[in-house]
Length: 191
Image 1 (spheres, rainbow, N blue to C red):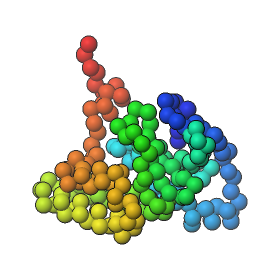
Image 2 (cartoon, rainbow, N blue to C red):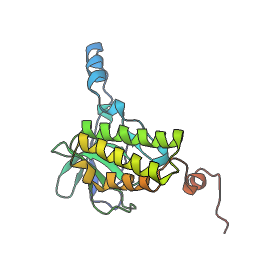
Image 3 (cartoon, rainbow, N blue to C red):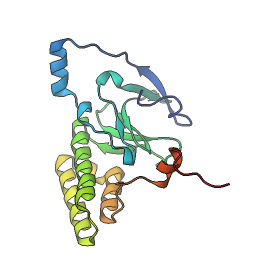
């Protein structure tokens, strides 16, 4: 399951529904293969992005106002949701630096497109490097323009603004952090 009750601890959300694994007929399988946006979302562990792959892996959460959200992924700050208007929001975990839900995109399709562009920037930086300030700014502007073409509302989102800032300042999540070493037992903090 992509999230559990401990992930929701000290938040205003609780799990209201989970689904059983679906067994597909061959024609259903073919239809799902063509339309499944989740199957196109790749996990990126260096920034703690993790997504479901099938619709039956969705988790429905609701808040105290009885607003329901479909959870389809998470990162280190919170969980990715679809609201009743089909918009994509990041709802923060209790330990996140983010205090309020963040609008990300106007639809799941637009999120997938923008997220794939973000991954392409990360892999470009890994493959080619962007150590010159001029190259960083050019890459940041290109990323911003591409997102604007996909979903003009999303470029103003703090979610993408943070990545644009990270590109400009060569602070992209392209390597492990000290916490990755500590949590995997590869370093210890002396007492």
